[in-house]
Image (cartoon, rainbow, N blue to C red; front, side, top):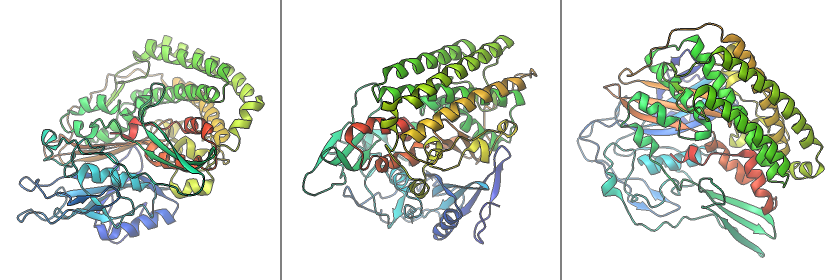
Amino acid sequence: MPIKHPNLKLTRLTDALPAWAGEVAPEYLHEICLQVRDGGGRLVALWGSDSRPRGCETLPTESADCGSSRVAPPPAPEGCAPPSRGRGFMLHVALMNESGLVCLHVVLLNEHPVYPDLSLIFPAANRMQRATYDMLGIYAHEGHDHRKWVRHGAWHSGSFPLRKDFDAAASRTDEADAYPFVQVEGQGVHEVPVGPVHAGIIEPGHFRFSIIGERVLRLDERLGYVHKGIEKRFESMSLQQGAKLVGRVSGDSTVAYAWAYAMAAESIAKVTPPSRALWLRALLLERERVANHLGDLGYLGNDVAFSFGFAQFWILKEQVLRNNAVLFGHRYLMDKIVPGGVTVNLPAEGKRIIEQECEMLKRQVAILRGIYDEHAGMQDRFIGTGLVTPKLAAQLGLCGLAGRASAQAWDARVQFACAPYDKLDVQMATYRNGDVAARVIVRFGELFESLRLQLAILSNLVHEEDKPALIEKLPANGFGIGIVEGWRGEVMVAIHTDAQGALTRVHPHDPSWQNWPLLEHAVIDNIVPDFPLINKSFNLSYSGQDL
C-alpha cells in the first residue's frame, strides 16, 4: 500500500495505473498529508462534492465575506442526517508518492463543513482550497488566505454553485468586486497592473507587479475571469456528452483530458479498452505534445525578438496540425478519445505520412536547436532568467515540464506507465538549472523523445481489431480517477456517479494549478520586460483552472 495509517483503509481503483482511494476522518488528514510530504510525495488535486440527502440541501451560508477573511457558516437546520459514505459534503484530496496515487475522501459535517488547512503542508493547496470554498462553501479551518478566487462578483457571496440546491437565477449579483492584492511598501516602490485583458488572443488574467525601477519585487496573480461553469455543466450531461466537454477544458490539452476522463470512466465500469485503441491514444497524445512544443519554441524565439525562430517553428507546427486534420479529422484532435476506446483509425497510408513527418521534424528541429544554442543574444536572455531552484520547486510542488527543468523527475509515463507506455520505455527529459534556458532544453528533449515514441507506436499498430463497444452508462455510486502526462504535466480527471449511475460530480484538474504560483517566484528580481519570456517558458493554462 502507498500509505499506511491505522485509520485509513485503501481500495484499489483500477488496473490501468497504481491508484487507490479510502475514506478518512478530518482529524487524521494532517497526519496523513505530512507522512506523504515527508516521504517525498506531493499534492495532485483537491476538490469537494455535495452528496447531501434530499431535504437537507438548504443550509445557512456564510455570515460574512470580508475580502481577505471569511467566517465559516453557522449550524444547519435540525433533521439533517449525520454524515456517512455518499452523504453530506466531502473533501477529496489526491496525493502522489513513489508508489502511486491515493485519493482521500474526507467526510465533513453537514452543518459545519470545515477541514484542516493543508496549505502549510502543500502550498499548492491554497488556491484549490479557496476555489473549493467559492464553489461549495467547504471551509479550510485556520487557513491564512481566504480571499475569493473564483467568484468575481458573478454570484452573491452566500451562494455556492456546486451545491445541488444552487439557483443560478436567484444568485446573480451586482456586488462590487474589490480584490485585496498584496501590497509592497517602501521608498521608490510602485505598482504596475497588467491585464486582465491582454494583447493577442489569450484568456484574461491580472498580474499586479510591485517594482522598484524595472526590478520586480513581487508579483500577485488573479485568474478566473471567465468562469465557464464546466463542473456544473457535467451534472446534466451523459457520459459521452461529458467526453466532448472535458476535451474543451483546455483546448491545447484535449487529448490528455479526454484520455484521463476515459480512464476514470473505464475504472468505474471495469472495462479495458482494446489494445489498438490504447496504442492510438498514445499516438494522439505524443502528437499533441509535439505540436505544443513546436509552437512554444517558436514563441520563445519571438519573445527575444528572434522572428526567424518563430516563423520556422510555426511552419513545422502547421504541418503537424494539417496532417492531424487529414489523418484524424481535427487539427487539435478533439473528440477522438471516448470512454471505451477511440473514434478514429489509422490506415497504412497514414502510418507512412507520420513516419515521413517524424523524419522531417528530426532533421529540421536539430538544425533549429543548433541555431538556438549558438545564438548569443538568445542565450543571454535565456540563461539565469526566471529561475526556480530545485529546492523551491520541490517545496511548492512544481510539476510537469517546468518541474523537470528544475530537477523534479516526475513523469506519469515513466513512474506510473499505463498501457501502452509500459511497453515503450519512455526516456524522461530533465535538467536542474531551473531557468528559461533549462525549460527550453527540456522542451527540445521531450520533442525528440515524442518523435521516437511515435515511430515505436506505429510499429505496434499491426493488428486490426473490432470496433470497441463504447461505454454509455456507468454503475451506480461509483468513483474513478484517471491521470495522464500531458505536455504541461499530469492531467487528472475524477468522476463520481450517483445512485442512478449518472454523472454527479466531475473534477478535471490541470497542472497549471500547481505551477501558476511558481511563476510569481520565478519573476522576482528579474526586470519587467522579461516577464513575457518567463511566462511563455512555463506557458500555463488560464482555461485549465478557470472551470
